[in-house]
Image (cartoon, rainbow, N blue to C red; front, top):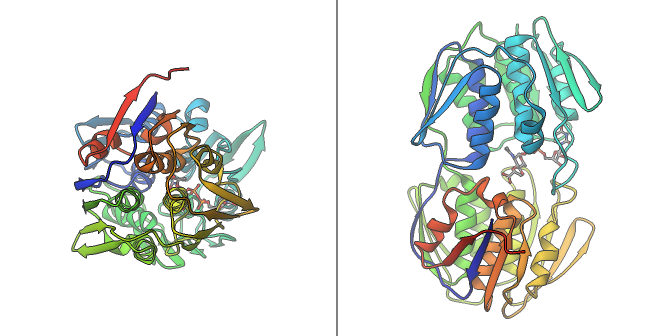
Length: 417
Ligand code: EPZ
């Protein structure tokens, strides 16, 4: 599918943020650890959730979406998730921890690289090996087995979100205590720990760089509501400011988007926090910024592309350094088709602000790049057509409806070439 966006439309009104994709994916996988049924509330209708539910079903566990809730029941009886599902979505690799903990074995294909880099899983495997898993890699598959996982001290060379989550899930039913040092601090990691504790787990320190997981004998069932999506919120905050509109963003945790809000204010926008709402507007010129993406609580890499689109029309030159992924600049060539002036030196991009961009035919290369092109299209002169818009639907529930309700003029149409 492709999206056609009419430019020069200031966004005005209110928008409700959905639950966090990056909290829900590990939480749904962690439900595999529970002995009884689990219900997750307020689950957005996005394609990544559909894929993870298919993956859970492929392991013999029923995952059913009923309006906004996912009910998961049954015990896993498979240990080899299907190749095509794992290749479609890197987060599938998170089933390793729960399957090792519950089945004592797992065979899973290495997740593909994607538009934002090779994305290895060495830290996931280092942690699982440290807990006693025997792991071999043959013909692109990871084959792992462990009679019983044993708690251990694990140091992460990089505070990887996925590795922290995979190890945490493996450790919560292990014998003894596991310490994850230099753990990821992301709110989604904290939400996963809170969910597992809600089922009877014993995890402390999530949100700090040392997480302690005491193994327990079993996890029972329960019901849980995940945190709001801080990246969806940040995306709409930037869209509101880029369009010089005024938008009230509802269902946010301001604490989770401090860096995004701070940089938005630095660029000359207003961002007023009111409890779990933030009102964003802008009257003055967009001031150029220096941004460096870092692990949480630093500036989030998942907001880098959106800010690049925003700063393409700043009053001066900005500098963005992407320090988390080694190749997350695929959106640059697409923004340049719209007239953006961007030069890269390795992981650093210099964006020379233009008065305005011009609508063009562009391609979404990944989820956040697609969101960036939407932001650029909303403010460009003329019409922008974004092909491969399925990438955007992976993580933004009803984004066309939500933006059109704010005055955008976006239509969804079959690919026209
Ligand atoms: C999670 O991916 C998110 N995905 C990503 O969001 C996000 O960009 C990323 O964290 C960083 O915040 C989900 O939560 C489902 P990492 P993940 O492991 O876990 C290197 C989106 O747009 N690394 O923290 O894959 C890796 O190559 C997505 O919603 C290793 O070297 O990220 C990368 O350079 C995109 N070895 C860096 O760490 C490993 O074993 C960060 O990766 C693991 C990771």
